[in-house]
Length: 203
Image 1: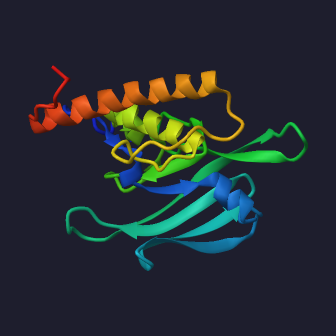
Image 2: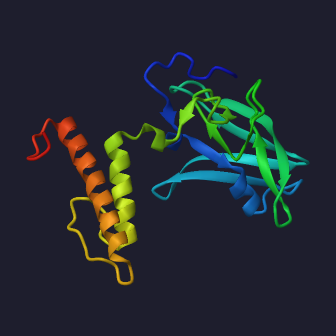
Image 3: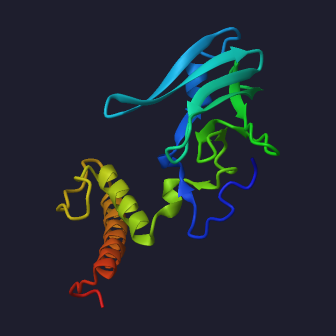
């Protein structure tokens, strides 16, 4: 199962477009008890779009589901995903998946259902996190919004600025405002470049 996406030339797909299994959620919901069988649904706009059946055995989880690719025939899958456990600092233990892809076995919290129809880790499917696909102006906009939240201003650089928060030192406020303005300038310059606009004072 190794080498997913080896022919891809234009960058990685991102994790947010794949269905996932989160071992942390399964553990939090008490579903990793041996002998426990249960179903799991993925929804969109309140409607179920996919489902899977699982059965917990000692130190492994059996996945059972059907899938098809490109309108082809449905294929039935049933295979184990082994579990690993690490102690927590304040008692108890934390569950991890061992990626079931051949030759992998990485200890991960999330598995993704990709084009191969098998759950595997993001490394096997060569997936990037959405933040890795951000442009410089995307990052600048996000950082500007973070400052706006800290100052209690409305998020969005096109919104007017607010006042200095009560209790904040003027020096701190002026530093944050200057950082915000610099990030806003980068954002606007990036937008202008993509849209081929001319913004006064920006070259």
